[in-house]
Amino acid sequence: MSRLGTVGHKLYTGQSSYEFVGKWRRWLVLSGVVILIGIIGLATRGLSLSLDFKGGTQFTFPDKGFSVTQVTDVVTAAGAPSPVVQHLSNVGHGPDYQVQTKALDQPQLKAVTDAITAHLGGPTVSTDTVGSSWGKQITNKAVTSLILFLIAIIVYLSLRFEWKMAAAALIALVHDLVITVGIYALVGFDVSPSTVIGLLTILGYSLYDTVVVFDKVRENTAPIAGGSRYTYAQAANLAVNQTLVRSINTSIIALLPVGSLLFVGAGLLGAGSLKDLALALFIGLATGSYSSIFIATPLLVLFKEREAQYVALTRRVQARSGSSRTTISGSAGATATSTASSGGGTSTAVADRPFGRDDDDSGDDGDQPGSVAKSPGPASRPPLPPTRRPSPPVRRPGGRPSGKKRKR
Image (cartoon, rainbow, N blue to C red; front, side, top):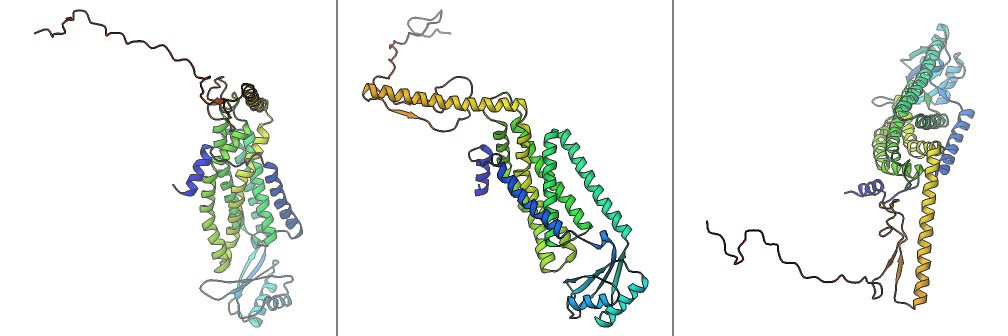
């Protein structure tokens, strides 16, 4: 078995555990700081909307060795104020310039095209015009798709699990969405229809990961309401530990191809059409894995432990653990007193370990953790039972006393 498999086995069986639920304040503060940075970037810099959303005219022509400043001056002088100039690196042929302006009419479009051809050496200039109405339609469709997706999530989780799980999953999804949008604002990448597709994809992945964890939480917490061994928080934390290795494996496998799209395809090879989709997927997959473990489950525990049955369960568990500690301390004190009065001859050992799986309410304290174990001595040995001779075997009726067999 590999090292990761060994760790996963220990986490699943409870031999090893990390406190995810108990440190919920730390995770919420960390997420709050990241969200605050993203909101500040969104408020100061805003989102860079692509041509499909804001509308306008786009010019694309090959780079003949001119700088971005020279291209900006030529386009501005031709009658297109405040152009957005981007330098694109393409695989298979030379780099290109992409210039986006506001929507131009035919005379302005011809003037800018002639200026690019004359001053920037562009033999072929491709133009693309998107009206403002088209951009508004795309924006409305994107927002509508997102709202319908969130409503479907709430309905599904409420029917599949319960509304508190749906609320925790929805908060985790909003957490992923806000962080992704904030990073887009800080980085300055264009928000295109590909970005919207990527956002919907990562929300689906985050939901999938959260549902897997919640299913294990429900499996662990279903039989504990009437017992007194685990609180809801302890059972939920065990569920997170049991699914931790699976979450790590699926996240790494999903991030590797998306990372190659982002860093190799868009970064090294200059495939600009991939960076919008790849960045949304990369950020969303990472934050979705984080939120399903560190945000969704702790929030669910905060919601559930307010219920009366789990409040009573927590009190029973705390009372039981407190009484067990009192019993251990009392037994140790009594043993020490008897040993001191007798002048020795008896050794005492107190087991100091958490309650095992046989620690129930049966009242059998002989093998319970924390019981007092005495070493065998002459004074503590029980009396031996009296010895008896084995009785003779019972003779069946009709048998011969001589032992001879009857002839047939």
